[in-house]
Image (tube, rainbow, N blue to C red; front, side, top):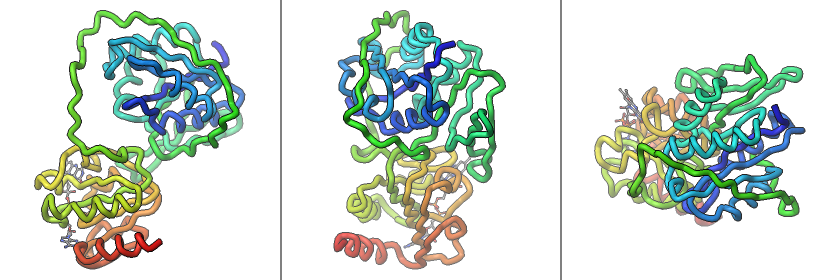
Length: 322
Ligand code: FAD
């Protein structure tokens, strides 16, 4: 086994996703002496994204480009990654716990007959041993896990591991590896985005989430304005999605997205257990609800009891003054 740790980065719309930098920071925490090799897959030149990985701590980067890697498929990315793994024999792999990470890593782990610890939110040291901490029971408890053998394979939840400071003076090789991605049983012809453009919910530092209390699609407009002035994204409860106030792509919770922003503002959301499963690990939670007995106040750091349609415009006005 080499002294290399592989970090699988993700590029979307030619931009590298922040969780890729968090995965590098996690790899450094796992072994500060290891050589960190980034891997990127796509269908066009990824040199610039590769250089970004270097400035955030990767020592070198391998890019695999192929027409069949234009959009993610587990087969295509799996073939690419397995070839890179075959060449490098790394001592571990780190990737973001994203939709792609969740889909791809079990397949790779099974091919390698390796263990996988997913959804890691922190890494601790016990002597020389890495201890990986991950939420269980919808975020109500945390478990600590270690690997029985030496090979480390983890996915890290976005927004939990602090990225290393960007260092533009760092340099490293970014090279392309030729891999023939073939015999795919599935090819994605087109991707139609439902969610509005803007800040990615999973990586947003600030989320303004609306619930059934917002009452209509129009009622969400002030929430978008608040998210805008805070540089954040809009999310929703399933109640709001079921009522057709917004798209299911915005749903946060047990059957939606799991988010951990620095600031989560829950607006007109009652705080059902299934919703809390997706947001209760946010760093600061602010709840706005007209019912003082609402369960959301049990997880909130700050609560405002009142009518959201009065409070949100006031908040926007005050924040704009800052
Ligand atoms: P409600 O419970 O109706 O709450 C609306 C809130 O708005 C109330 O607290 C009310 O006081 C407040 N309000 C009303 N008007 C105003 C106003 N003018 N100003 C301020 N506050 C106001 N839910 C999720 O969110 N995510 C999930 O992933 C999810 N997965 C589920 C999976 C399963 C298997 C099941 C059974 C349920 C799931 N649910 C999920 C649904 C969940 O149980 C709740 O039904 C849902 O979260 C309720 O949404 P809500 O809080 O927006 O609506």
